[in-house]
Image 1 (cartoon, helix red, strand yellow):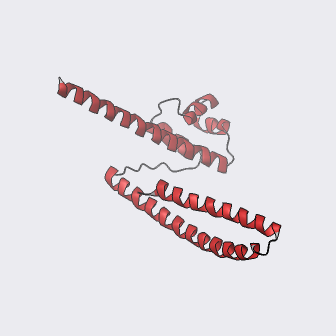
Image 2 (cartoon, helix red, strand yellow):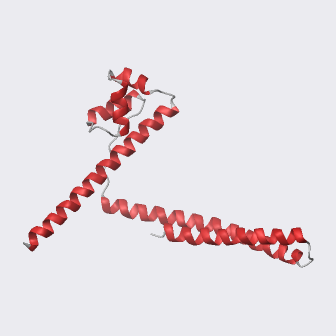
Image 3 (cartoon, helix red, strand yellow):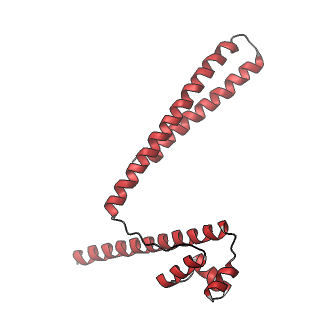
Length: 165
């Protein structure tokens, strides 16, 4: 009995994964079609006419409401002037590539934030000295700069947490 429960759980997990992948592919495809239509200023009516189907049918496809075939996908792509390509990726290689891309984004963001941080430090030190003069407008500037400085520190911390592989 224990084995049956384990297998059911694995099958449910697999089925959920398959459904997730299917929905992702449909979403990515329809987004690319809609973006191409917007770039080329094409309407759903124009696409429907090219395909010999109703505008409502095109709308259903673009909303992901119906389960369309590769033939339909290719026809739709060609109708908006795109070439249909299929790319299958190894899950493990894809995961490693995504981790490497996230690490590169994190590094670039860190370098940018460090440069901004250095600029803020220099400005803050200068304003701190000016604020000693007692000019109220300078004191307000120092307060605003410190707030910006704290926001930048928060963004830098948040970026590290979000992009960490």
